[in-house]
Length: 126
Image 1 (cartoon, one colour):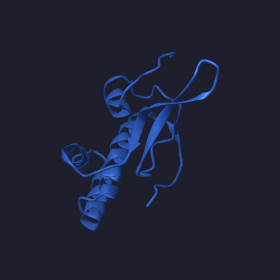
Image 2 (cartoon, rainbow, N blue to C red):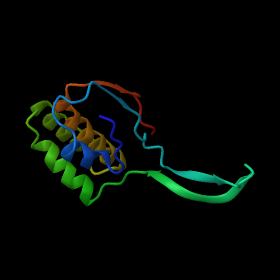
Image 3 (cartoon, rainbow, N blue to C red):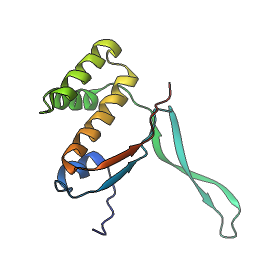
Image 4 (cartoon, rainbow, N blue to C red):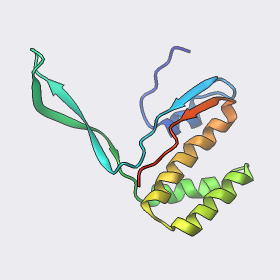
């Protein structure tokens, strides 16, 4: 209680969160908008500055990380997850949307052991 974690939430879910330790998760992930989101800075007097940095990139591509996470999902003890992700790959192949679904599937499967209620926006763009 009272901890703030910074980093990839998949790593945090796998290493830091104890079983049945969370009551509610509000999940507001990137939605494959294919955009970069920037953090804008302001001048000391509140004026907008041209200075900015990329906060996160909401573009997903099939690659080594997606392949590794897919392999973990198909060996997941919950056979429904394994069957669904394999069916999706047969249909979507190694596409950007499949990479996004694998990313989301990995994180959602980690939440299964927490006995949580999950609130999540129900869409992905494109």
